[in-house]
Image (cartoon, rainbow, N blue to C red; front, side):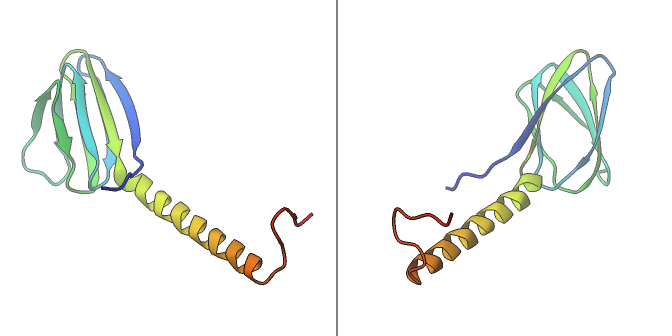
Length: 115
């Protein structure tokens, strides 16, 4: 199992305070404290969740989370970060390949610099 970065944000909600966000498929809302009411664009039913619940967002679209009293939630976004992570991995591989190519052509030997 590989390591994948994720963007984690923690949000405190007061009584009847709303959090409105655009979700991405694969994001998770974790209830750390209290309870929340959640509705997601395109879903026919609302979700009520308490401390310890993890809600997987299956579709892109607008999500509204309301605190049922004081609540604390974590927003865990893997999809947003994964495209950036893939780009960084690709750039790292390209850089390593370019450095190997330069070394193989003998332009630099160990201990020398380009300066």
